[in-house]
Image (cartoon, rainbow, N blue to C red; front, side, top):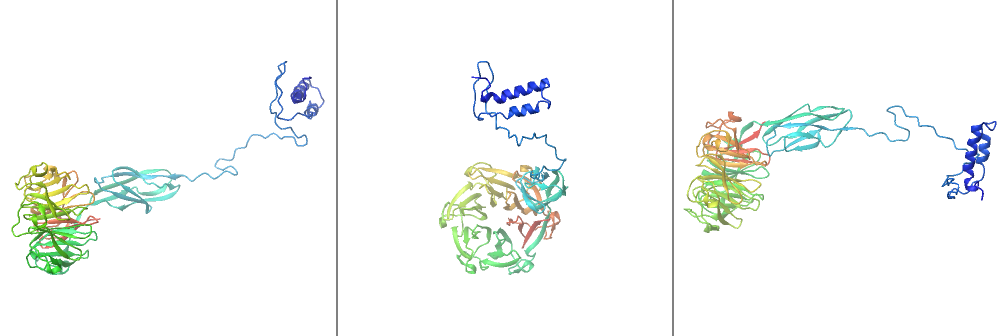
Length: 502
């Protein structure tokens, strides 16, 4: 068989064409001869011939034949587009987005700050340091960082907070500092008595304890009037239960009787609990009063259920999410617990006064006057005669958070701080405690780490409204916190309100 069989004819034509071109053959530079050779019929493109004995290479898939009437035209190199001009048919490049952020300083522990960018894209910050909003800003778009919500009892300011984004922004500066306290009078006056009314027209007689429900209604243990009073958010005072006649009687509204009520608390269903003489009473939202535990003319100490339990001078109360009531049992030097069924047990302390930190009955108190619960179930105690604020874990372990048995006045941390008869306690959503410091005529604030500062009060007895230490209190006996973090204080014969200055 000849070497120039059908499968090898294109290769042979190419070799012959190259030879003629090299020798100058053909008046047209070899193009005619090559064209004629290229028109020689080929075998199908898929035909493959193995190598011959003479070593000529085989031809595999040489590709489609060329149409003589429509020869292929070589494609030259692509011409680049002008800079910045998208190639025809290509999608436009995305518009770049730039991050907006900066640095936060001064935020108090356990608090939160909400920042806004252009009135939206809310960013909640719980720690100091660098921050960045989630949504990027388009090129050449304005941004404006503002404070959406201040932390409780702090004011935050923004600098370098606005401009036009042409690159990532990380120069926004946010700084937080403690807010000043504005003290006003919500209800009552320096004149004692018993009268319903709005604001200063109302009269109280030695109000001892306060509690605030979720809608902002304030309940007052009006001790010398033997009543439980109610103050709406706009300052209207009415009598919730009791008639003004001393006694022990369950009943509805004015048919019930109290004897120097000294503590009050409210649960999530707006049931009100009252430490009354030697008993713990419960009042429904409709004003129906019944005795939950304790009672009797003389009191004493006994754990038990209902009337079989005894207290001696129960004072401050706190209620947990399961409606267990915690009682500062003043003359028994104990912290007691009452279940919703009226079962009374002793959580910590004994009938022997002291200031010893320990667990359960091995710990000691001296005149515990108020109790308050945090979100983790820890209980705080205003240990009146010891001039200390104590802490009790859910397991009954007692420690000293702030203050010492050396009474006095000093801001500081832990035992370096001084109180003089801490009488009332409250706690806010961030875990900060507020103390009605009776002997110092001041309202104090304690961080979760035990750092004590003075929020309001000049340290002298009086009834002046004002900001910070320009305000005066008259032996404040209790403090309560509303849902917004504002404070109410029982002082003299009036109920005061403290809000941050914004």
